[in-house]
Picture 1 (cartoon, helix red, strand yellow):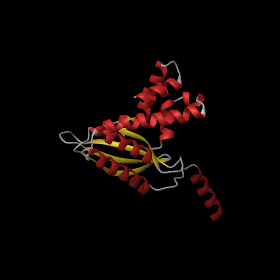
Picture 2 (tube, helix red, strand yellow):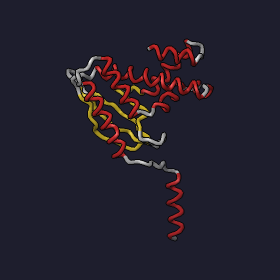
Picture 3 (spheres, rainbow, N blue to C red):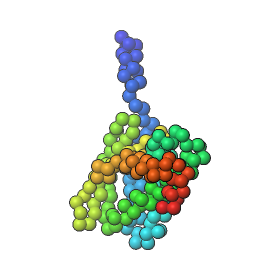
Length: 191
């Protein structure tokens, strides 16, 4: 009877996702990232210096290869390894500047972690952004260790899913270049 119960429990657990790290570790990761974002937005540095800081934050805390592959969508399957590497690097700079400019809107404000929970095979860390003269709003960070490191792979800001928005935008940019990934990479570098 005990052996049967153990087998049954094993079968139940086999279908459950196994997370190699904890919800507390996911929360701590985003806490550190938010600490750096808050320090940068309230540093008083000029925009160029702040955007450079955001590039570093993004490189340290984001799963850039996963986000880039998702943003490129189906075209990622036909891209050569060299194209994927070049696209990932160009996308890292493009996205960190784009969201860095968005975070600049937070000057004088604060972002704080309010909770964390398990979702499917990853964690969602909940934060609230409090800006001067505006109502607080929700930001959700999706964190995983699938890449071998604990990193965030998505942000949902006021209900807008970064992965979905970037997939649409990059797809549209690629369409305008008639599917030419090299042209897209060159244009992302110039942005």
